[in-house]
Structures are given as structure tokens and as C-alpha cells.
Image 1: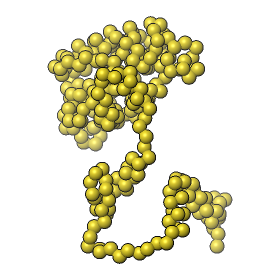
Image 2: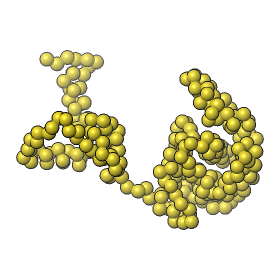
Image 3: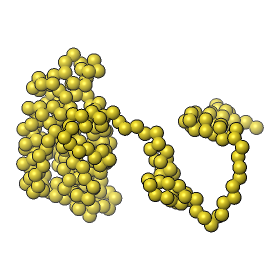
Image 4: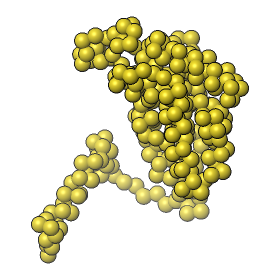
Amino acid sequence: MLVKVKGVLMGERRDKEENGLRAAIPRSWLDKIQAAKNEEIKCIVLDENLPLLVMLKNRLIDIKKATCSQLYSVEIEKIVQRPTCYFKWESEYYFANFEWDLINVIPYECTTETYLQSLQFKIIHRYFPCNYYLHLWKLKDSNRCTYCNATDTLSHYFAECEAVRTFWISLKAWFVRIFEFIINFTALDILLGIPTDGKSNDITNLNFVMLFVKQYIYTCKKNSIPIDFYNFQVKLKTRMIIEEYKYTMYNRNLEFMEKWSTLADSL
């Protein structure tokens, strides 16, 4: 018996859902399933008292205790390829030591804002729309910076442009006063952040501020407005007020104080 719901027969809906599920299964998996059907399957009786172990990140774990995400990660690692952007970074900054596992998690450790995480992802994978790339992609007639007429590469856009160099000097002096440690703010520091094990709130604060600065620079350049340090501080203070409100909503005031109080109190 077929039941009609909102003009669609339930039997038809079920068929569509099944077809959708089949279409979502990778072709290589379907081939393995088909091959398994054609092979002679031998039954093996296992002792129920003995655990069935699987290798996860060089550790043997009882399969009953392994999560779906862990098993999925293992399968993905078998097919993952090293991003080509890594080779470009390593050739351009051949003297640096890149800890990519730590670099990639920086935007997720220092903020929950997806637009900031997305910005950093574009920078790491080198498809941020600076004029150099826009010209390369034939979306702009010139690869020159609109502020100082130099070649508008990633490093120039965020770190070396005359319009932003003074800004970073001011930010460096401000950070020395707040946290009492010196950061050189090299182009690589600015672009990729400072790798950390996540235990240093000061470095987490620094990475957040640098990410917020890059978003601020992008907004200013996109709208052709001056890049002003004091205007940035006003925007950062507003962002800290919002952050504190979010923590307060979930009764996490103490966590906010431990993580952000030094930065928030300086604004």
C-alpha cells in the first residue's frame, strides 16, 4: 500500500532516499563490497572474551571503544595528500621550520568565529584575493597594491605594505606593554600565526589579535579606507565585549577571565 504525503508517494520517497544513500557511497567502497560478494566468505568463530583490536594512530584499541570519527579519520589518512601550498611556503621561506599540524589549528584554538577561521584558511592555502592572485587569475588588470603600487603579494598585503607597516609597529609596542614579551612580527608570524601547544593564553590572545588585525586590514583595503590603529582598538574592544557576553550566557565567566582578561582590561 502506498501512502501519499504532500503529493509524493511514500514508496517513491523511500526509493529516492535509498538512491541518495547509494550515490553518497564512494565508488571504491562499492567496488570492494561487490568484490566481497563474489568471494567465498569463510566464517571464523572468535572468542567473545577476546577483544577485537584495531590500529588507531599507532595504538591498538578495542573496536568496541573506537568512535566512528576515529575510524573515519584512519580511512581518510589513507587517501589524504599533502596540500601543494605547503611546498610553496617551504620554498619561499626555506629557512623556517613549519609545524603544519600546529599552524592549522591556530584559528580554531584562538577563536570560534567562522569568518576569521575562513580568512586564515584562505591565507594558508594561498587563495586569498590579493591583487597578485587576482591578476594571476585574470580577474584584475594589475597586480599592484592600490596603496603603494608595489607588487601586492600575500606578504605585502598583510605585512610589508607602507599602509600596514606603521600599524604593526604600534601593535608591537602595545603588546609589549600588556604582556611584557617581545614578538618580532615577521611576515611569516603575521601570515601564519605563532604555533603553540594551546596552554599559553598570552600566545592565544596574540594569535587572535593578529587574526582580527588581518580581517581589519582586509576590510579597510577592500573599502579603500585608512588603516588606523586606534580605530582598530575600538573594534577590538567591541569584539571583546561580545565575547564576554557569550561566555556569560553559558555561565563561563571564570573561563573568560582566565583566557581574555589581560587583553580585555587593556582596551
